[in-house]
Every structure is written in C-alpha cells, then in structure tokens.
Length: 386
Image (cartoon, rainbow, N blue to C red; front, side, top):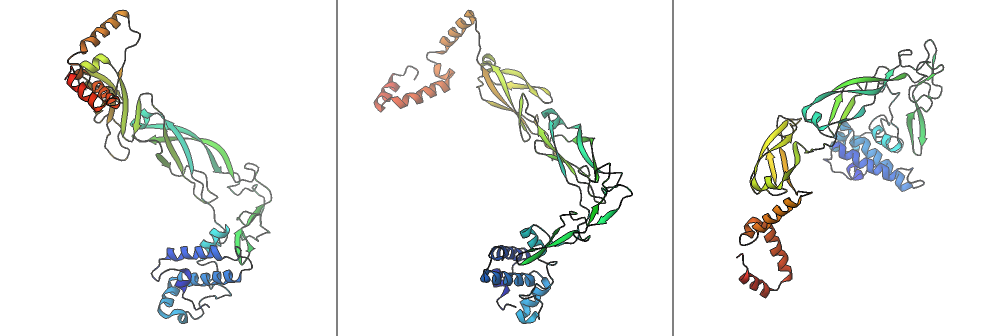
C-alpha cells in the first residue's frame, strides 16, 4: 500500500466532493492506463496508486477513517498492488465502463422501449388558435404469438453456451479483465432454436396506428408535445417509450411571427399616406381598423395591441406590428401624369422644405461632401428657401 497522501495523488483538496474525486481519478486513469502506456513501469505504478486512492476516497466510510487516522487506520482495507478491495463491482464500474465500452453489471433485465419523435407541420392559424390533428405513425408491438420471446410456441429456448446463461463474457484488455454483453445472445443469456413464424424471431410485429394530438394555442416551431407510452414497445415486461410530437409552423403569406408578436407589411397608396385616414388591416382574428395620420412615411410602424399570439405558457397575448409600405402608382395615363407634374410643381418653391424635409436634409448632406467651407457660406447667404 502506498504511503503517499491519497489527496495528493489525485491532486484534489481534502474538501473535494465525490464528483471532483471521480473526475480527477478518471483523468489520471485515462492518462496512465497500461493499455495507453505499454511497457511503461512508471505509468503502471501511477495508475495503481490512483486506483488505490480512488478506492478509499470514493467510499465515505473508508474516507472518514483515512481522514482521521491516515494510512495506519485502514488496516489492509485496500487491495494494494494485488487488487482493489471490493473489486470492480463497486466504485470502478461506471468509470471503466466509459473507458472500455462495457459495464460490470450482471445479466441485463428487460429494456424499456425507445422514445420516438414525430415532425408535425401546421399552419400559423392552427398554431395560434390551437387544434387537434390525427397523425399516422409506424408502431412496433410485442408479438402476440410468442409473447415477445421470439421463439415459436412450443419450441425450446436454450441456455447460451457462450456465456452459460450469464448474458456477459469476460474479456481481457491489457491490465484489466472486463465484462461485456455476450455476442452470441446479446445479453439475454438464451438462444432461440426455432424462431417464431409470425415475427421471425424478432419478438415484435410492425404496423401503423393513428393518434389524435391536441395542440394547445400558441405553440411555435420547436415546441414538443409528449404522448406517454406511445413510443416503441419495450422488451417483455418493460414499459413502452414515449412519443414526442415536434411542431414545425409553416411560413405564412401575410404574417411573420417572432415569439408572441406578429408582423405585417401593409401596402398603402400615396394619397392615403399623405392625407391620412382609417384603413382596414388583416389580423388572424379578422379585420381591424387602423388610423393613419396625415404625412405617414414608408417604413413607419404602428402597433395593434393584443392582436398577436397568446403565449402557450401564460395568458398574455402579444401585439401585432404593422409596417406601412407606400406604393408608387404604375401604368399612369397621360392625364394622370399631367396631374402629377402639376402637383409636383406646386410643391416646389418657397415652402418646398416643409413638404419634403427628408429630401432637403439628404441633399444638404450630399452637397456638403463636394463643397468647400467658403462655398457653403455663400450658398447659405443666397439660399432662396432660407
């Protein structure tokens, strides 16, 4: 038995938690394992010291004794270089199971069924209002003919000769011998001589079933609904897995959603934007009236409170944001062109700046890039709109 402080070997403090001790030991075991350092006596000794330290510090009673009395109080409770006390069935199984891909448990019991996921596409209206949808999914059920054994009724199920019914075989890997699932019976400990004709020895039958999924109002892409016990069937005596229905809300022609807020682009004529008035705006609940002030600019946004999406996790209802896009008239007649030219001429002159403040400000900024300070002063003195 080493006389070096176990805490120093694992490079942890005396107040280290069980998780910290396990992490430190895992790191050293991976670094100094003999399989990774063949014919390296120093690494082998360090590995043995780390294993001895972990055996003591991972056991609460042994650790308490060691903290109080040191090495003298252990009285041969460690396996030293010849072994590891309680063996691998104790604290080493979970660590070396990760390292070698196998555990140290005995024959495994019936395994529960796997969870499944179904991608469900729904439109925005159904996602916001909530609905019920029928889905058809493939299903795997325990074979009724053989009751899940995989053997033809009346035939014999033999004990696996490879593992003698243990379900595991012992394999030597360098310094350690580890247990792995038997490759012949896959951990069941039994071999089927005459496979079931219905399921062909699988123990399961395959078909389809229809389920009704209740979708709550307000779901969004990525939300999942759990249907307990609707996943794959487990092995004989084990529970079924669950089915998770994942929402995928499709793109809408008018609205765009961000959380509980809806966004809508509203085309508007030049005359309505200039004069103002009330316009009808589409919402998921029908039409809504929006008052537009005179002089509304393209890109300006308005909020319709409570016209968005109700949160699936609370009673709060989001808002809808309406963004105005002023539409330029197209395919004008000759008379319409004349009227627009007359209108444009009427805006020019002394009060042009107040009619088009953004245009005036923009060209002032552009002009400043190409004129000197003296030119700017002269332009200001001769500005007819000043």
